[in-house]
Length: 334
Image (tube, rainbow, N blue to C red):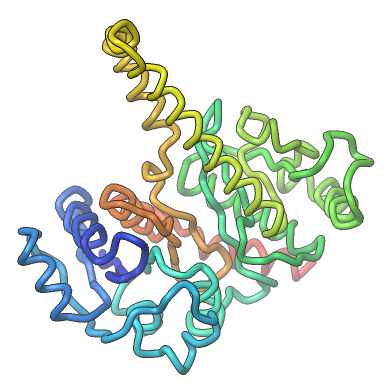
C-alpha cells in the first residue's frame, strides 16, 4: 500500500512529517510518496538522519499557506505540495492522502479535484475523540458551517459506516448535538434534523439529542453536528483538555511532597495522557469524497503523522468509501 503525504503541511513540517512518515514505513509496512520541494526534503532527511527507505518524492516547489484563500489551490497555487498530493491521488499514484495543511484548501481540493461520491451533498470532517466508554466521532467539525437537515443526516450515516468499518463498532449509536436532550429543543435545523433521524432510526440507530457536556460520556458513538457548532465543541474540548493537563502538571510539580506523589501516580498519568492525546488517532477522515483523505491536526508532531498514515491505511483497507456509495445509492432508489 502507498500513502501520499503532504511533506509541508502543518506547523512542524517538514521535519515532523518526515519523522512520522519514516516511522510509519517501519511500523505499518507501507510505502510513502512525499509531496513537496525535493531538495528541502532530502536536506532535512540528511540533517536529521531520517532514513528514506520506501519513501519517494513528488516534487512541488511551493507551500500552501493556511491564510491563503482556499480556492487558490485549484489554479493560482497549483504548484504547492498540497495540490500535488491531490493530483497524485487522482492519478492513482497512492491509495490515500494525508496532510496537516489548510482545512479550507483540503476541502476545496477534495471536492473539486478528487470529487464527491455520487449522491453526497457535502463532504464532512469526522474527528475521532476519546470518549469515556470508547472513541466518539464528531461530524462535521468545520467543513460545512451552514447546513441543511438532510446534510446532517448524511454526516451521521457516513460517520456510522466509518465507525463500524474502521473502529469495529457494531451498530454505532448516533446522537444529534443540541442545546438540550428533549425532542423539542433547538432551532429549526435541529428540529428538522431530529425528525429525519428519527424516521431513519432503523438504519442509523438514532438515540436522540445530546448536549455538549455529555458528548464524551458514552451515550453515542457518532455525534452529528453542523460544521460551526461541531468546530466550536471540538476546539472547546481541545482547549479544556490542554488546560486541565497543564494544571495537573503544575500541581504535581509544586513542591517536594507533590513530586513524590507524582512518582506514585506516574503510570496512571501516562495512561490518561495517552487517552486524551489527539495524536493517538492521527487525524480526521474527510468523508464523502471518492478516495481516502485524512486531515491531520495543524500542530501534528511525528507521532500524529505516523498515526495519520496508519489511519489512512485502515480507511483504505476497510471499504468505507464503497459502502458509503452503496448506502446512498440504495437510499436514492427508494
